[in-house]
Length: 184
Image (cartoon, rainbow, N blue to C red; front, top):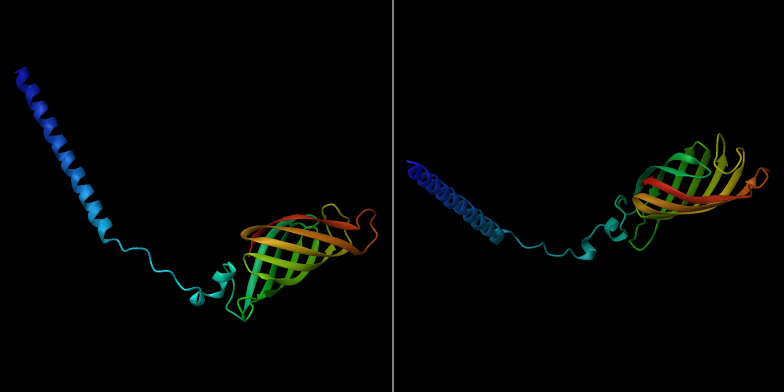
């Protein structure tokens, strides 16, 4: 009786092994058939037919000659944390830069910026900054002019430098630093 039971278990295990092997082979066959039917990669798109924002690398560049929207938040001294809104006028030709204008307000002041650049990749600005509230590294009530270079796609960084043009706080003739940017 015990031998009969052992023999039945061995036969059941063999049937399960055969069934598992059949399922595996069927899966491999289906995968091969599916791979044989998959289309190849799409043909390359000619550069001339691509929209201008792809050539520039900016992901939010408006159509040529149109105006687009800029917005984001930044953290840097002397503004501490701030938010900005602005506009970019896209160039009419692909080999040109757009014009930008931004207004930014933060814990440490307000800034007006104008410059050239490409949305979503990089921009150069000339800035006018008026400090107020609790600015970082400088005193409130000062006015600065400066330049900024900003780079990145959605997450970015910038380098900014300012020279005081109005105010008399001791030791605050120059300000600037690195910025962290989230936005377009």
